[in-house]
Length: 456
Image 1 (cartoon, one colour):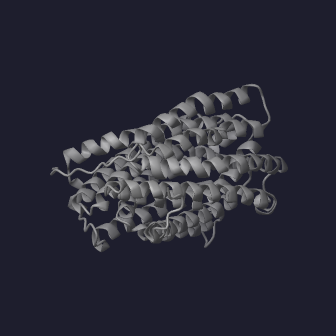
Image 2 (cartoon, rainbow, N blue to C red; image 1 turned 90 degrees about the vertical axis):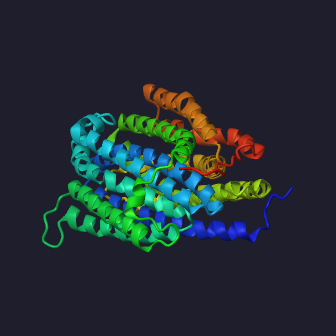
Image 3 (spheres, one colour; image 1 turned 90 degrees about the horizontal axis):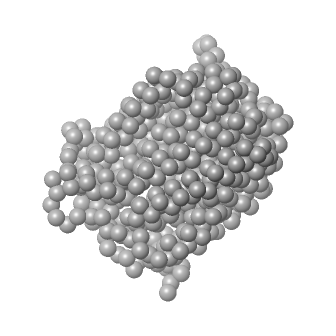
């Protein structure tokens, strides 16, 4: 039994796909980090307001990610056998559905912005700041959803660099506009967090426009045209729904998890919320590497399973387990090494209490991220991408509703220290490893989803 594969194709393809995805994520992180530093200069209330105002978008991203993941799983399997006609139809369905989701979320926010923000916190100053932010940023939801599905379609056909280039332009647009609009540069008035929201809206429009321009005018693999967005394929649609429903439901479960996380942290103090935002930035940085590799592994998995190469996939899966365990351990060491300079040098305008909380949260993260790097990435990159989407949904549902949420609410109810509350909300990242190791090595998650018969 081979534990570490010697197949150069695996490593070459994995890195070819992973590097652009990681660079795109790194640029996203860097720009968001710079945004947070700009906003942190406005004080704890501004940071907390933007954080709470972003929670609805986090839910939207969870939903969009579900459609995105379903598209990648099925489209990449068809790309594995080079069935471009099916990939075009799947891409068109994904774009349509995600756009509809964006419209619904925008309407919901515009109708009752204060209602949604107040679900996460009772601090009136934070609610007011959050409402100011979300009213403008909600207009970007439709553009965000559409562009993400276009770029996912490109990744499914092994064109991840497209997302890198387009997102780089959009994100630096956002960064420059933030500098101008937040602080009132170039003769414009200082708009504070409203300026940050407007900058996000403009950058999302730019990103969406570039994504569709590339797909319709420059892509040579699918050669899609605007009329192709209306393509229908009932059989493929049923496959998309059957495979994608557990994925989308799984993302909704995680949305419930994020809502509860925000609710619980929001009922602590503004300093604790600020600390959670700071630690969230560090975790986002770590996810650049781990989830970039996981996304690439998912594409390789879908293509390999779609082509029916099951024995080769077992070899790849064993190698992936070793790789991601190493990544998790290295990430843990990195957290412990950079936590002090990260907190004390980069966040000079936040309160001492917020910095103290952030240090304790990072100690917890150093432990839980080992599990995150291993089980979360492999359950996504192997099990879910291999076609067994229902298992991941069931596993997440059990842990979120029977472990994470009860533990977090109990910690809040008994008034335990903020770091204990934070640990309760992260405990599943370690516990899931025991389930994941059994599931992954059973290899019963490899399911070929491609159809051989004609489909309309």
